[in-house]
Image (cartoon, rainbow, N blue to C red; front, side, top):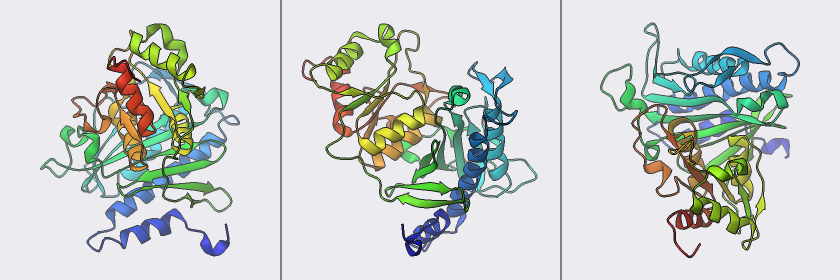
Length: 333
């Protein structure tokens, strides 16, 4: 890319802010703070195999899963990068049981941040891509310091969402409801540069499905028939990384469908609605795709619990619709 055409994320955010004369700059600064936290997390992820920070922390998170040391680091980095800025009313993290108030010594703002600090952390020790997922809402409670109801909002009311992929390069992808844009970190200058403007799901999409087929025996009969159809007469190829952010990112770039179905051991699904499914759904739908539970849009769900779980079918709109028809028991997929 010619140097004259290089656009940093800071410049891009300022240019977008100028399209809204009523903007105060708080939202722009909030996204800049998230980008800074992503750089710090990315730095540690990239050297995880070289320092003692790699490994297990010896405790479990609220979901009963063993917490990795980098999980704790990422959670702390995001909190500390945003707790004092006066832009947030409260936060919620996949790693924390309850909603996270802003410390009393700091001012508060009008936004709410929900985040999965390090999704796919079970892949850390084997050097597979992992990610951070974030969701931003406006505060709806009357108090100045936020409340649980500020976090329990349907995905359709998100004002921004995105993810950071820590892979062969570090990439930040986000939407504010007017398109999807991707930025790749240039480590030589420590800046996210605009690399994927106006991302859209490709047409025609790649005939690719992504799902953990080791759970096949636990799936419903309609789910099994649908996957059999895809890899049989439909002629789909299978691509599964086992890291949610990486699998959805690939699906966004190439088209196809990613599935995390409900099964006999997880009848309500396994992915977290607020920290994983809703923000990724907003990104993909802004790019022209669809996200569903298999029977209803992800973004329409009114959450009742911070750690509510859901099945997820996400990707090219036509393929997600096929999945919905198959799960409904229709004879025509």
